[in-house]
Amino acid sequence: MSNPARKISFHTISVNREETQIDPGVLKDVLSYINELPQEQRVYNIASSRKVHFMKEQSTYQNRFRNIVMVSGKYHHRPDLINVNTAESRENPKTLTEAEEERTHISLDFSNSEIRVVMEDRRSGISISYLVNYIERYARLFHKETKTSKDYTLDYTVIPKENFLEELNKLSRVACGYIYADKKILGSEYLNYSKRTAEVKDELIINVIAKRGRSILDTIIDSYHKFIVPEENIKRVRIRGINDNGRQILLDTDIIKRIEYIEVHLNDEKGIVVDSDEIFNQFAKLLGGLDEDEEGSKP
Figure 1 (cartoon, rainbow, N blue to C red):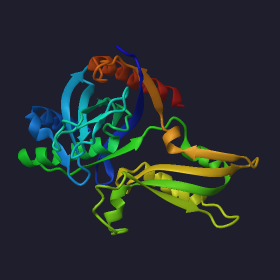
Figure 2 (figure 1 turned 30 degrees about the vertical axis):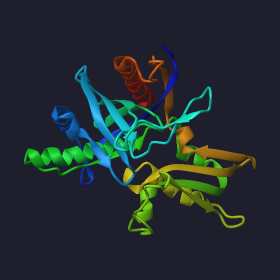
Figure 3 (figure 1 turned 90 degrees about the horizontal axis):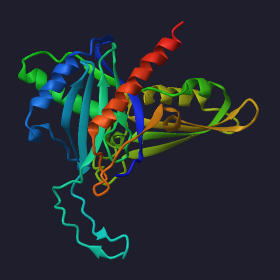
């Protein structure tokens, strides 16, 4: 078995009724509802991007954590396979309705007024936005079946390692910025260019350039506020600026967001995690560390 490091990111999920944040406990019922469904009914197929994901496993720990294994995959894609030793190709036996299974381990901490989330940060896995959209979808089904009202929405944020705005405000000038947005804005009411985006990469890159001698600091600050609000579809903000000493500074939300690494045991033949409990135990310690961070920051 190998022991590679896995990248971990931190987020929060809040449950809101109009302008008010409410007890997130209602989502425990939604998660239990999903867990009781047959596996085929948990599958969420996003036909436009030919992606599928579903909640494969779920467990409760210390009556505080919900530990989840999400599975995702991209189907209708089966290029030939290449032998890394001989460079020879052979036909891929996978059918167009099959996807390679990618697992993402997630812990939800219900001990506060908002849910704190620790999850694997994997390019081929589930992102926080996909997780929230998945829970929202099944929340609607849950309330429909139980004949109760779904009078709330879910929002999420990134838990930063540093204060991005604080670092941004230290700059005397911002000359260039890159805003990474979800490709679905192409078909949104704002642009309405095209909804046929299956062959388009997941992110659009918008390059914002200041007029000569001017600064786009205010524009970037507005973009950052939208970056931490999921429905605005901004995934990343990256800028080049100049500080008071005239030195060029690079700020990137992908670098500044709180990221940590854990070591896990992988099956060498399949490249998958051998023991999910090993990951979830480490997640519990990391979430406990957030408790200590918050206590230490109180006046």
